[in-house]
Length: 285
Ligand code: ATP
Ligand code: MG
Image (tube, rainbow, N blue to C red):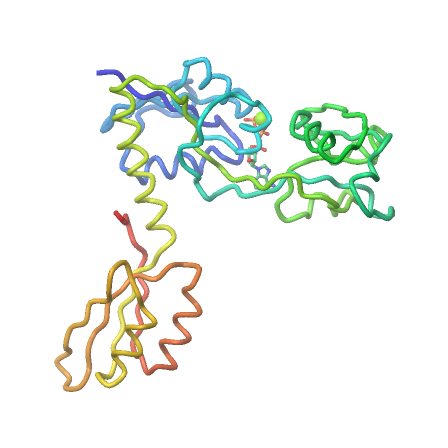
């Protein structure tokens, strides 16, 4: 049987998180990262470890079938591939930054200036859209030091907290793109591989949903049940079971991470007692 070949970053910001989600999906890889290729024991896939910049090209050429990569790197490469899943981790933005001391009003600031970046294609498109004529200087790493050493007037680079910019005396002035890790695939795969890909994506989605949600148990006085159930919509509707103690019930449900703290506050106010919150291992929707 043909195996689905998955490209992931060999070492860097995406590697561990990509491997974690594959593991959590129940796929065990045999050999360590010293080899270029790892086999899975329990699922028909193999994993190729590559430099992240090479992943879109390898997927496009058919060396790998799918790849785990930053959306930024995928868009920079410009390959005709599909994003089949957004992974929700390694969130960052591609931004323009300039030395702190300068005033800034619009992208026109960059007219006639020199910008250092590892993302020349995305930057060129942005500058064209804003009618700005600037010189793009492509460098592959340590972009943030370019203005300090007189190599460029500004930079276009990935930012998450902004602390690297700050420690290099730079300020963020435009966000060009928001990025996260994504799974990319060739638009057309042979049927046997499409089947494996569908099962793989189904499992990854179950892992991602579980990460986004918590299982919640609490005790409620019967007179507050209606109020408490209205705060807890759950996947379908909350489970309510009578407790041994007269006039009390146990309520079980699932709460989304984003609304979690707000829901807990409301539940307490509504009279909930003994609230337990439990991580979910997998969630099939
Ligand atoms: P490689 O050696 O594989 O070429 P690299 O140094 O080019 O690695 P990394 O720095 O590991 O790449 O970044 C990989 C991806 O992680 C980026 O494409 C981006 O999507 C994301 N990323 C980069 N910087 C940040 C950041 N500061 N915060 C969060 N995610 C980031
Ligand atoms: Mg790289």
